[in-house]
Length: 82
Image (cartoon, rainbow, N blue to C red; front, side):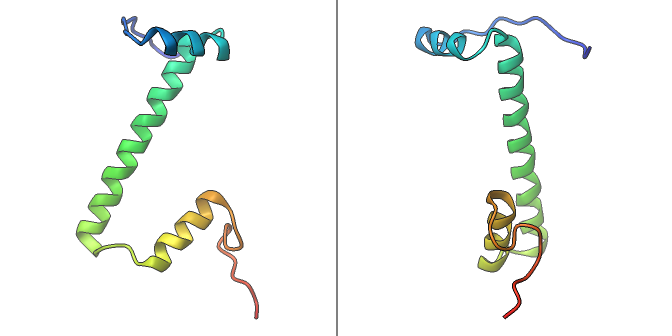
């Protein structure tokens, strides 16, 4: 089991009620949400550094990235044959 630290978090009552409807493991749910947010922020920082070094992403690069993330014809890097 990973090391843990007990903290107190204050949330709006309505959020807590909805959260308890979704899970019996509130701590696990919140830990996953925090981990997801941290990954999001770290990725954003990495992308910003990349653009500062190599310039802005092209429309084609953004389309390919979206396709890989959300699926689509080029989701696995394959190109369609005409």
